[in-house]
Length: 332
Ligand code: SAM
Image (tube, rainbow, N blue to C red):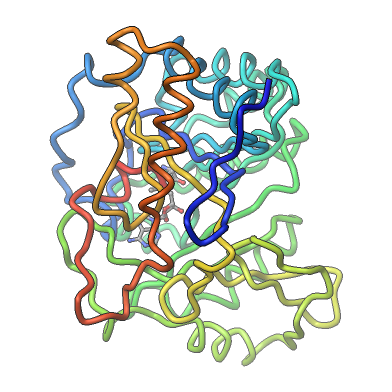
């Protein structure tokens, strides 16, 4: 039933859809949200399960999307998650499905999600020290994350990936320790450079821990060599650790942007298409859905939304402006 693809004016085609299912979260990571949380989206603004699944169906059946990643906020807080996953994996061609999660509660839901058809999980974990975890997330929940990771592996939601952000003076001395911990458990670790997407606008280029510093720190304990597998449009640069087979990834969104190979598009929990994490405009699909637009009209609007995608995020330009929505409301 294909009507076309999600192509921008630079020839990039989006096939990887990130769907935010809620802007709420049960952690308060200091680089993401203030301690008191944020003004959450009004319930009526959030797409219903049927609306989310309809948009995913249009993306998969009519617009060439091949991968769907559920995120948030915290996607495990969405009551209908397993049902949304099940309905997504029943689409044809069947898209690959994954979630990006903090893993709180995953120990209870991993099996149900796997049975619903979920392929993989990416778990966010910035430290394996209890006190530092508490400092970063403002919650004492490290044990729950570790239990969630184990449950994901046991449920076959692998390869289980771990995403970590390093913060200067907080956990930037812990990269080798985190890598060793992940390798011992067969989790694939990727470090992500901190981006200017926090609600508090506290990010600073001078303070962020760069990919170069991450390599330097890892090389104090490990030998890193570029991994053989081709990077394609994957954001992570992969390195074999001590000759392999373990690898570590570094997502250098700020210092080594990969916008030229971007194949992603995002849908917020309130039904807005964003063609880039750093886009300053959004296209409203919820309004179209709720005013009775048919699938072809929604597909046309989605394609039109891609035409304003810029060649790059421009974080390093003097004219860079942080988007109004924080990461938690866009979907990381
Ligand atoms: N709650 C889920 C989780 O923890 O994975 C999904 C949403 S969270 C916003 C997705 C990812 O974005 C997490 O790995 C988090 O560490 C990362 N993140 C949040 N703010 C960030 C920032 N300013 N720069 C880089 N990564 C960030």
